[in-house]
Structures are given as structure tokens and as C-alpha cells.
Image (cartoon, rainbow, N blue to C red):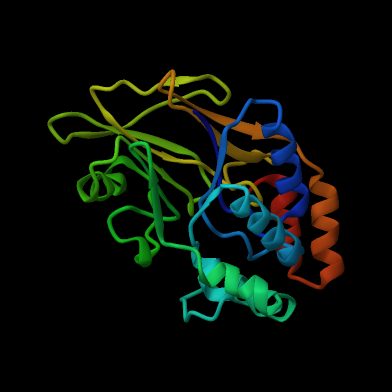
Length: 246
């Protein structure tokens, strides 16, 4: 089975559409969405509706912290994120809000765990930015592969049979063998608001048959997405971020 893993779409229609078009050429059997469908971007309604269509067709979709906040949960947010979420709440209809609220915190399939932030305490929304921060997730589950979002910067870590966790180097676009002697954790990066200096949508492709993972990037209309943010009256910083990938 080939699974496309998308996360942190953040109401960026242009990026979401571009990745879905890219996925269509990779023989994907299933899509997994790791949360934060909304927040920051100018198209929360369209992105919610498209995510709901994918779920109806069999996609996995877990809840992110921005999704929870948009659905009414009290979540701690930075001022910029809070301004965007206040605007987002005014745009979402009851069905869209209910869709976000109904997302589970985690999902599992074929030895994989899907979660927005971390496997150890999903509801705490902790950031996995290093091998040290990845270690609690390995201790919390026996899954062979943990797939996360939340950080907006791709990362790969492995855990050996002795419980030693190491961050692993990788090259975007090249398949990474998921050796069965180790367990693995991948922070996928962000579709709609990458923060690693690359102004392209980030996603991942998992092949359970070959036991390989590849980190992917898809160019999209960053100028159009930034213009939509500007036209919506959202903070200008959110538009600039898309143009520089930070």
C-alpha cells in the first residue's frame, strides 16, 4: 500500500490543491491528514470541505491544535495564530466546525500511528524537533512507524532495539529504507506553511510493500496564496511567510 501523508494544510487552498494533484501521479492507495486543516490561511471553508470529501472516500484524518481551537476548544495560541483563528471561526459553518471537532486525536493502520503532535501526549501539542524530543513517542507506542506534523519542519528519527533514539539524515525525494531492525518516526513538514526555508508544500509518501518513506516537495502558487491572505485582511506576516518558507 502507498500512503500519502499530508499535514498542517492551514487553510492554504493553493498548496492543498497542488499536493493532491501531485499525489494523483504516484499511485497512492490512501491519504492520511495529520491535522491543522485550518489556521493562518485564507480558505478554511474550502480546505475543510475538501478534507471531509477525502475522509468520506476513506482517508485518515486526525485533529490538530488549530482544528481544535477553531471548533471551540480553549487552546493556548500565540497572538498571530489567535488573530487568524478568530477570523477563521467567523468563516466556518456548523458542518465544518462539527467535522473538525469530530476528528480523533490519533489513528493507526498497518503498524503505523498517525498523530498531529506526539504519540506520548497527543493533547499536549508538544513539538518534536530533535531525537531527544522524539524519544517519549517511541516509549508511548509499539508502532513501527510514527507519523507526525505540528512542527512545519521535516525530521526523521529511529529507535533501535535497545531504545536508543537517533535523528537521521535524509534527502528530499529519495526513498528511505525503513529497516525492520529499527522503529521510525517522521515529522512530515507542512503543506500550507513550511518553515524550513523552502517555499514549497511538504508531504510524505509511505510504501508499506517496499518499506520505504520519502519526503516530498511540491511547488505551488505562493504568490496567489499570499494575495488571498492579504485580500482577507489577515496579518501581512502570514502572507510573507509563504513567499520565503519561514
